[in-house]
Image (cartoon, rainbow, N blue to C red; front, side):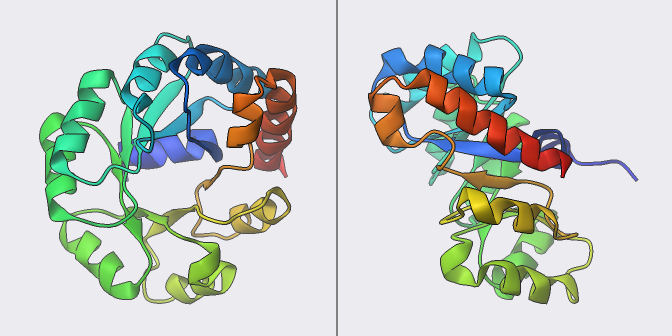
Length: 210
């Protein structure tokens, strides 16, 4: 059976840093620090005015793939693709964003929390989702509950996950990767603490091999 493009991205990534970048000038050194630490699939959230510029700059860094996160509308999908995003991540599930991504040929990882949302996604032809917000929505217990009825579905949990919890998430059979902001928190980015981000990225990358 063929693996979908979004599953291939998540399987290779294992851990996806979720990045909120306030200054476009931080884009290149941040991407290089994360790559040096061993993480090469990066999610840039569309939560700042410079997010699309950040995506464009990070795309020029070799051997990384860039996702656009916090994508809310079909217009966001289009702008993210114009900026060069390799994949799309949404906090929830909407037909318009899924259809826009499909039309533009870009993999999408929609957010879900409930069985109803998963079933709606299945009706749209999807089988891989972001479980968001993971910790407030039941975390590992909820993922275990999803295994029975949704045996073919896979997840990338994100939201409130700490480094010391990530390995437990990755150990679940229905989890392909885990996402989190702990790898490059906003305060370290603002302080240009690239060496510390390299260290945190290295610690996160090591989780894939446990």
